[in-house]
Image (cartoon, rainbow, N blue to C red):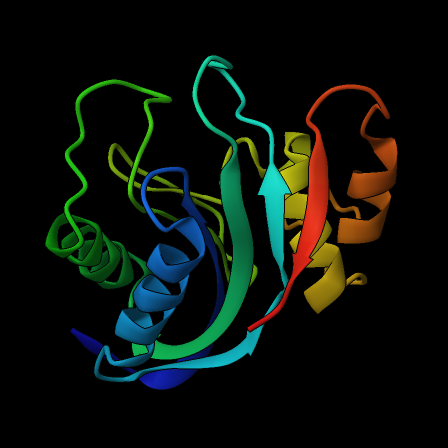
Length: 169
């Protein structure tokens, strides 16, 4: 359902199956095709070590900034349909996936529902989220923690969560 105003949302994009970079680019294209949703900015892509189940292949990750006239709940439904369209099957937490789309932030809203939590509850602990967020908007303030993306990134331990830039498209 469209809203009357446009809202800014940040969406994490990741893949660790198949042509990972292509999968991420295809998902971004599909998001840009959602009615009342426009991709405004896109981070570079990063090769990131898996978190949780470390025996799987490394991910390609990035973040996009979109302007949207749909609610956060409708945006979630749209990105779930994109994941399904691209072949993602949800079985287990932290399993390999052809595409993974997460709403990280939606304006400065705080949403805590059964199917949607914004800000994303783990974003402040993940280099593969914070590094591209810093690239897009280093001074953006986390609506719950009250700290900038740069501050949150700088707080992360140096060791673990290997990540390296692979460029932008």
